[in-house]
Amino acid sequence: MSQIAVCFRQDVRNEAPVACYARSYAEAFAQMGHTVECVGEGHRLATLNALEQRPDLIVEIENGRNAEGQLIFQVPQLDWPAIPTTAVVLVDSHGHPDLHQAIARSYEHVFFAVWARRDLFSKHASAHWCPNATDLTFFNPWTEPSGPEVDYGFFGSKMGLERANDMIQICQQKEWTYDVREVIKARRHRWPATAQAMASCNYLFNMGQKHDGPNQRVIESMAMCRPLITDLDETDGMAKLFKNGEHFAGYRKGVPGELEEAMQLVRDQEFAQPMARNAFKEVHDKHQVKHRAAQILEVVR
Image (tube, rainbow, N blue to C red; front, side, top):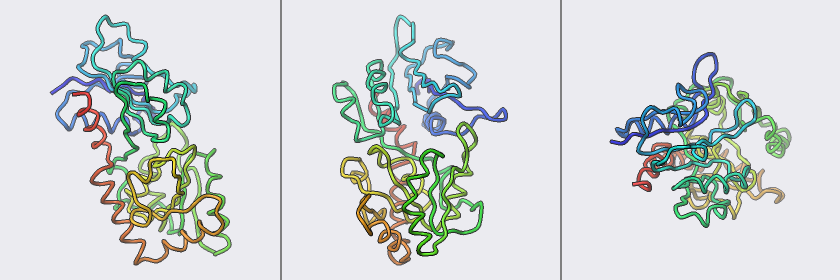
């Protein structure tokens, strides 16, 4: 058993911690039998320097910007004479490449989610691909829907919803129903609301950005056991984890007719339902946060 400090920014809403994947990591470490202390903005201890006892391992996890728009990493600010083993989990390297490359130098071990930006860490002595994962506590096939049944769904931040414009246009032409929206604003309780919105959809849509596949939406959609339509990108890591036609229905962005063909394909239940079940099993068996937590411990040991 080890003493692990899991360092991440914690949003708090109505005096309750907002559920997030960083907290899922902490819970996974605890379930493995380790003693865990969560540290950072929003926790009992706001900084690593405030720890009463130095841990055996520090795992710092990127968890988005705070209300002031800051991305804060604490390990580079430590003033201890002796630093324990350190690891960092970097999620959005496609959005913050320069920062992530610089930050990585302060950690013994780096775990990055975006395969396409592995070049940022090529000179690091211990850098490891740690793909996006989900928590089946919050995303699962048994989630009750929050609204009436619709055909296609796409959920994300307000600034990224335009990625579904082509899907919307096809739905309007075909008179298919759809739901495209920001379910919950940033720093609020988005679980289980996001999964409930997904549960109302027969099929889920994804389009990546900046070669970030498989992004979080991909894994969550598969965890919901809904047939997924997603773009094909030869430069991302999607094909390393999932197979087109076996786990998802793929299309090439900008190629006329391909998105519509994929949207029509998933309406064939003999094709779509086995595909959705295959994808769910793959996520269940390999792509939960607990699997990533085990990967981290295996490396640092």
